[in-house]
Length: 204
Image (cartoon, rainbow, N blue to C red; front, top):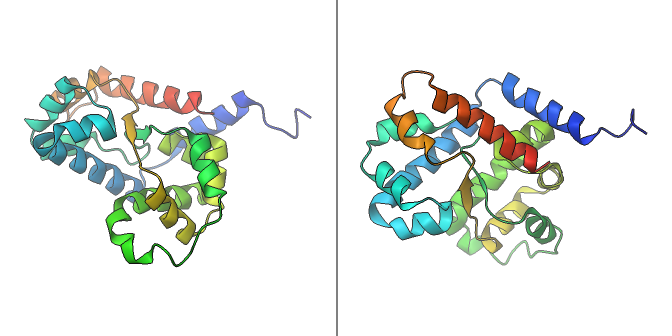
């Protein structure tokens, strides 16, 4: 059976190597940068909403609010998103497996475009390589496979019924140091990669 069914370690080795060997993906980079843009703008206008949706501390919110976006944008990654879902994956899989009405929500689709973009990007990456997708998004393999098999309309429906929440994939304390050293590779950047991979490993 060992030669047929990959072990957990083999799964993680495969996904980790895929993530490390991947060149930056334009769609992943643009989405992560937009995610940081949303966080940055909301830190200035609705800090309480940032606490609710992105689970950031007051110190991080204050740091980001007083930093120019040109610096904040350097936190964006083209290989692994900076945030992962802060929703039980089993609940998402259960929602994806439920029947859905293909006509009932089309009139309201615009208000869920950002969430839809997230799920459609996950679908694209998971269809291409589900192992890499687990590291890009910090999700488990079952969710990557479920999303890969979902239709576009099904994922747009998911964006309407699931209130998407995120959590940072690395320690918030690294943010100020990374912002101060945005033009060089510092210890904080290396710690970020290690911690981000560890979060992905925990979800396998």
